Image (cartoon, rainbow, N blue to C red; front, side, top):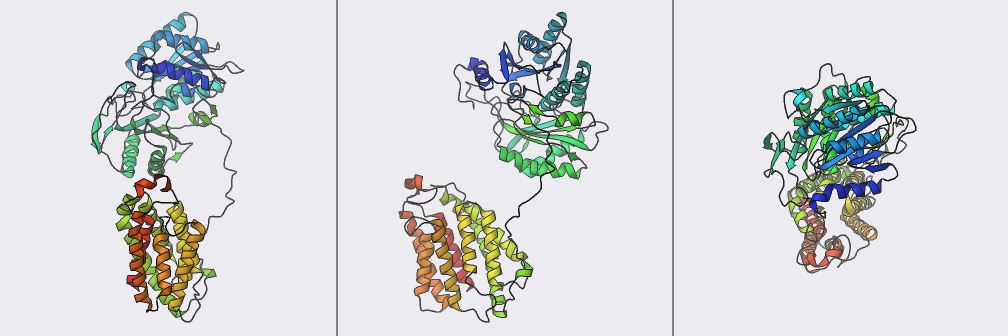
Length: 563
């Protein structure tokens, strides 16, 4: 829902005033919209437009290499013919004008009337209508214009900036439209400023397939799939509608409709890009982000522009608009000059492990598998207790860390000893888990590894006790916490102390120390956090155990069972 407004009826005008003030170094406001400051050399004026609510379209696409002006109507409403005329007349540089917009009845009427008004004054004016929405009609000429607006506007803006004639700019705009296809899906409807309900609803777990950007629902509702299946649907449907003689190079847009997060769009592109390549296409300068939106609609769309020798230079050309920048300086000269931290076991650097060490290494491999399985089983619970005063990601972080360590340990050569396995597993844990906990676990596993000699003929119980102490000391040194701060140390340090003090055999001593760790972890419910993200919300944490202490106790108990 749009929450910031004064008079809802004035929303479009009010936001445009703020926009123009912000970008006054490159734009000027005229009645009905904005125009770019004129270039040094006169060129064809490309005028884009439609209703508000689609930013960056339309005003955000005005600038060198893109549109010369934008006509901005009320939300989802065609601008008046008078406003179209006003913007086009102000932007005209004596080389003619192209009016371009999505294929909607109101836009067709008002831009058409404005074109007649301009022609009556001797200004050569052309119209290019965008019809990229494959879901809206089988007849290409009757389709709506949605995110394909961007490709058509971009091509004509680049052609005009390159000094091409009015005839050529018009022709290239129509050619771009003929070679552009889009399909969108909606997860939620959009709400007009001042309204309390969206223009349409999408049921929980559903999505509207074939949405419009003026708040129109999809042509059908489907169950909302995971990102991978949605990517397959979008690619399959768009490619099925490919133009004749498409060629092998494409421009691609994964567009957010208003409230879909950029990270979600990147996730979707992760599926879309390989599928397009598998279909035989080479992707050129892809765009992922919000380019043509619909207020606060939740949803995404996929646009494909099939390039040719004429269109590719226009798609890749420089542009400098308020909401879009492109610089064609090549990045191919950049070379990788860094080396990622090694997380695998380097076979050549391995110390020859003794039979005793290899026996322990076999146990570590099995324990790593069990720890990863345990963390997967407990992920939701650990996330739940972390959410009371933290960000709820502890379970996910422990799963990522333990699975990364397991993968590295599984892939290690069979001749790797326990020290080599723990060191490499720790590095993988730190690299993949994220957060403070991940770094602490990774570095502390390495510290424990440093207390084990892979070449030793015999490994004593005291070696394991010393490795535990090294692990705990690393946690203290790096984390800067102490017992009572409501962290994983509240379970780990009592465990390490109890293990060192015990005179019982190792398995029995470990079991006794585990009971101490579990009891200490439970008692963290009474504490207020003094470190980490939970500290500002200390009161909310009271009554709930620390997730790090709980997961630590779980893992210590599991290791004890293997002993």
